[in-house]
Image (tube, rainbow, N blue to C red; front, side, top):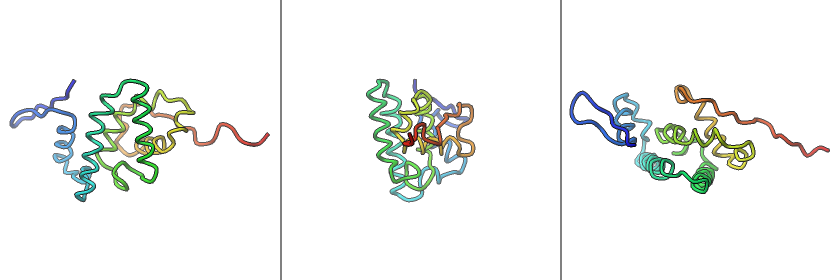
Length: 146
């Protein structure tokens, strides 16, 4: 199912990324698409990843690969495009929500960078909207003390 946006002037727009980028420009929030050429390319890359891998991935193995990829990428970054919040973060959050809701505590700890990023994005003003809050345990369940 491919989203379609019917506009008042001209033909409708088709595709998640096309519609999202159009709405970002309409809202005059161009910084969400990246500021520099490199940031714009990275945002575009993650938007493509969202459509081709996250939307397409349905098996447990696909999900594991996606979480592993993201976990490695986010190891030294706050957001997908580095240090700026972009459309890539918003759309990836929406694409991953159903996966994150179903992860066990141990899985969330295994993908600690994804968990940190996801928790940060879900608390970003205006992002979560109608989606449920995904709970992340702040302290370790087990201690080394005997």
